[in-house]
Length: 270
Image (tube, rainbow, N blue to C red):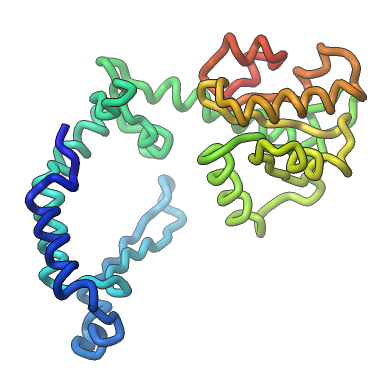
């Protein structure tokens, strides 16, 4: 597989940057073209499925070191890299993840229109929608207090245990939507394998009202599992009974066997 950096269009783009592009000043670009913002930006109007709500997505290249020549060279690179072909392959479920020989189906999670997305001839959307509905039911049960801990108390604190995207993504979403959050439910994040991170996160928490989310697709990530087992030890120091783990630990994973061995109910695997 040819790397993008080996393509002729990329080499030409790099040469242009090494020459004139490196010293480009964005302020000068705006001074030279009063219409620059309109020229290098596009606003897309997006509507909800019911048509009652809309929002605007602004794509703005004007604040980047881009001129007409740069933009054309970027388009040339996209074409030589067969970006449009790979985009089509992604949406049709072809295995463009060559390192794992897998389809790249994160687009299915964003497919609010429910257009069929296939992998190996099977529409994956029914399975995706089933998991999303299960996530909704579970999260609503936690927020409403219907989900109880081993003592019968409602959950007051949620601790996400993950690393990389399994940490940064949830942190970003939590921060972005904090304004709309429900009072009475606190969210904490543990990613550092240094035991201090977990210790600090749980030192004021009550095991009886704490829920841990173990985020690991494979359920083999060393850092995440180290923290998960430490969290389990902290919990059992108070709860004692191994059977209580199922009320206080859930998993974001595809490894049913590993999740079950940990003590998490596979029904609480998302």
